[in-house]
Structure formats: C-alpha cells, structure tokens
Length: 134
Image (cartoon, rainbow, N blue to C red; front, side, top):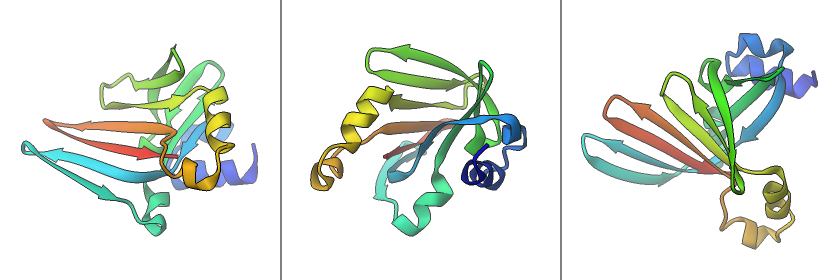
C-alpha cells in the first residue's frame, strides 16, 4: 500500500483498511444540510475540506466507507456512475465512472471548477447532509 493511502486510511480511523486499496478519494467543496425541515447550503473552505473527505477502500471484492468508520458498502454501477451504498442505510457515495473522472480532470481549471465528480449523502435520523466535490 502506498504511504499516502495508508496515512489517509489511518487518519480516517479505518483500521481494516491496512490491507485495503484506495478505491475513491474525494474532497468536498459544497455542503447542504437539512435539519428540522430547514435546508442550508454552504461552501467548504479549502482548509476544512480535508476533514470531510470521502474515502472508499476495497479489500478483495468488499468495499468500505473508510472516512465513516469503515462501514461496509455495496458497489452498484449504472449509466455513467458508480454508487457505493452503505449496508447500514446510513448513506451513499456516487461518483463518475473512471472515464468520466478522466474527462473531468482534463477540462481547463475554470471549466472544472463548475463541475462535481461525486456526491456523498449522509442520513442522520430525519435530517441529512450532502457533500458535493471533486
């Protein structure tokens, strides 16, 4: 395992990730929260984005939400997207397929800034938090 992947996995508290491979790493730029029926949207400062990264690891044919305590996930591929769904029902991460990610990262920086590569949706009781990022 690459040292930087190991460091990310350890920083996220993913102890089972020691033998795992990094499947996806995304850094959020926008956060939408719904609490008590009230919705709010806010940009995430670059300095805080690393604390909210979406990290998914793979060990064999099993996937884990490493940034959320190593929750097991199911991988579903449909259309141009891959969706990793938490088996506990706590949320999901949806990202572009690798070809879509490659195309996104080849865009000029000003065009890339207008696009998102992934969505991370977390359910908390009757509210939710959704991160959008690259």
